[in-house]
Length: 457
Image (cartoon, rainbow, N blue to C red):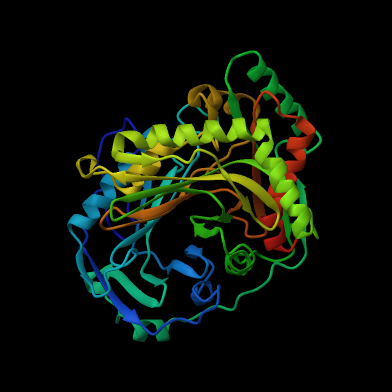
C-alpha cells in the first residue's frame, strides 16, 4: 500500500500484500482543522461551496461534510475490500500529523468511501483490475454541525496550504451548469421485461429456495450537456433534505437509508423495507390513509421483518446492548412512503469496531440483498441481468477515531467516463406475495428522485 497522492491500489484478495509499485515512502499527511465563520442557514450552503465536478459530499438537513481535491486515494478489491480499506486507513493515520482545534465528529482526518455491492469474485464482470472499494481523503473538507462550521486541510508536509478562511477564500469555483434536455431509456433489462424477472424471483421463493430477494433495474439517462454533479446535488439537498445526499467516486444520490452511524459508542441503523407510492398532489389525508394501508400490509411487514432481523443479527457481535423496535413507523418522503425502524445499540469497547467495520458486517442486509443472504445474492447474480457496481453498496465517511456514517447507495446514479451518460437505479424487495406489475410501479416511484434531480421528470 502506498500513501502517495496517487497511490498504487491495494492488490486483489489473494495477491501478495504491499504496493504494486516501488514508490518511495511518501511523507506523512499533515491535517489541520480550524473553526470558520458560520455558514448560511440554507440547506445547500455546504454543497454551494464545491469548486469543481469531482465533489465529495455527505449532507443532511444542511449539516454534514463536503470535500474536494485528493490528498490520498485507497482502492481495494474483491472479498477483502472492506478489511483492506480499514487496514490502509489505519496505516495512514498512524503516520499522520494532526492538529484539530474543533474536536467534533467529522473534524480531523476524514475519508469518504464507496464500495461495490458484490465482491465480484465470481461475477462475469470481475477482471481483477477495477477497484471495488475506495476511500478518498480530500485536500479540503468543510463541515457543519449545528451552529459550528469548520475547515480541514490535508496534504503531505511539503504541499501544505494555508488553513481556514484563507484557503477557502482562495478556492476557485468553476461555474455550475445544468445538463440541458435529459432523455431516459431502458437499461440492461427493458421495463416491459422486468416483471418477468420479478416473477422468476417469486417462483423461486415459493419453491422454498429462499425467503426474500431484492431485485433492481437500471435506466439510462442521456443529457444534452455534461452532467455537473453539483447541479444534481443541490437539487437533492434541497428537495430531499431528510435523506443523506452523497457524492463519492461517481456515485451520486439521496439515500433515505442509514446503514450505520457510530458516534462515541452509540450505534444507529435506520432500516427501510416495505414501500408504497405517494402520488403527486396527494392530500395529507390521503397520505395518512396510504400510510395506514402500508402499516397493515402483511407483504410489506414480512419484508420489513427480514430486513430488521438481518441488521440486528449483524450488529450483535459488536454491541453490549441493543434496542430493536417492536413495530416500524412510516417514513414520508416526497415520492414514496416506507416502513422504517431505527435500531440502536451500545458498542462494546472490547470489540474495537470502527464504523467501517460495522458497515462491512452489515453489508449486504436483507433490505438490499435478501434472506438468506447467500441464496439471495446468488439469485441476483443469476437473474437480475445487470452489474450493480456500487449501487446498493455502502457509501459515507470515516474519521480518525473510527466513528462515521455509512448509508446505502440507493436513490442514486452512477456518473461514468462519459459525462453525458448516467445510470439510474431502483430496487424492490420481493417476497412470496409480491406482484410483478406492482413491483415495477414501485421501482418507477423510486427512480423519481434522481430523474427529477437530473431534470428528466
